[in-house]
Image (cartoon, rainbow, N blue to C red):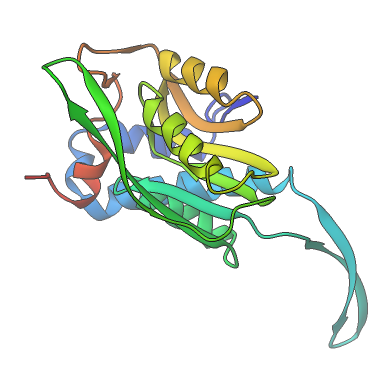
Length: 214
């Protein structure tokens, strides 16, 4: 199932507006913060889907019946662009385990590329809830190949995907190849350019967050 966070007007729409604005993008800290905020909102929405147990807790004045999350997720991200989005999600699930995967495009010519996975550091993910986040869902290849690599290390019980901006093509690709996952995304743009970048998108989220790669 695909959940579009900006389908109805909310603060997500404001954060997306600032993220796209090429003048506001010059404030690198603000750019990262807006991605974190979208991650926090996605985490809040995902939390509604998760299971809770009833507990009793002592207050200064008595005993209250409360709900307690019965399992912490593993929050996985694709380096380096995904770090602010992962931070936003982990700010909400602040007892979660974290996982890090490196994935990058290796161009074979001007318009074609393959996805290369190198670094992989995760806790045990077998029978765990996985939240896999990547801010830009362009072709969808990075997300799908990362998910496939995760499954080689264990079979998660549930997978949530989180992105900030995606293309229709990328969303279709991901939902086809990870059919049992729920996708939470800020907004879906219409198309990709010849290089596989989202239009109108916002540019390179990693470079805007951390500086241009050499």
